[in-house]
Length: 75
Image 1 (cartoon, rainbow, N blue to C red):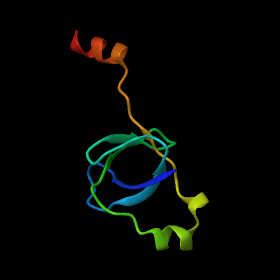
Image 2: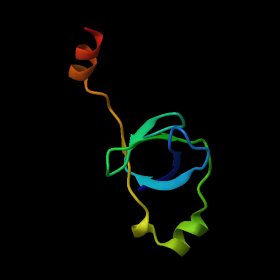
Image 3: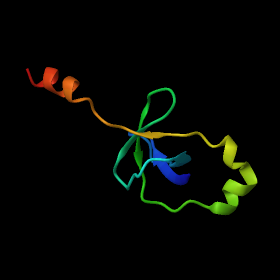
Image 4: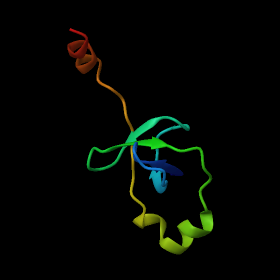
């Protein structure tokens, strides 16, 4: 499990999330509700994770745009 910082597109504040996917700064991820976030280039405070509880941190997955959806937009 990897911990990252990500923020909503129209926000300057970053939040801590966990992910199993390989993501880098600038990648798009989605939370459990399907909301897109942008991975920020910030370090994660491990002490904060230990104090808050790793199991309580929300999980995100890397966003992969569907090829079928892309083709229908181009028409």
